[in-house]
Length: 219
Ligand code: DX5
Ligand code: ZN
Image (cartoon, rainbow, N blue to C red):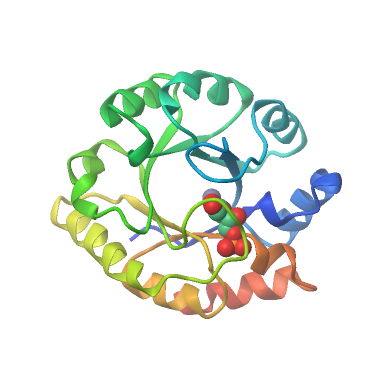
């Protein structure tokens, strides 16, 4: 399994001070910036999009992980790639032809992730696992920060890790939603290695200490 990476979801940051918030995450030892894109159709919320990503790109050298919670993602892959995403993750449920989306992302020279919501079985994406760099197993219903972790998703994380191991792949497994110093241990043991955290990190009084707490399970 690849080293644990912590991806700070700026959805819970003070968006009027985004540059400073990203510096706070970097200084605290986070590895990635997680950029949630919501279209109000695939999920019942709207966040931010391409112009904000361009500003994010200009103000950080950190790896930017874009999580597209949008319908028919293939339409906008190039725009997000040009705006500066290093990784683009899309939802299998939102794409008519997931393989075409993967090829488009790869064709833009970006890392590619495929995601499933809590109710979607791993079997829906099994054939795509060898084609992607990362599988995102959502651990809450996508759309909002600050929700409680859904424990039933742990079995799906194990299932993805088993499939990747059987195929001899070093696929990153990302989890997103309800991740904190306690749930991180459960998902790590299940086989996840890329941990997205929003409210736990940005609502923290001492983010560096909380990042260290998250990394304790790796020792
Ligand atoms: C939810 C987003 C998450 C969100 C996680 O749809 O994809 O990235 O920011 O928030 P927390 O860590 O607060 O559950
Ligand atoms: Zn996300």
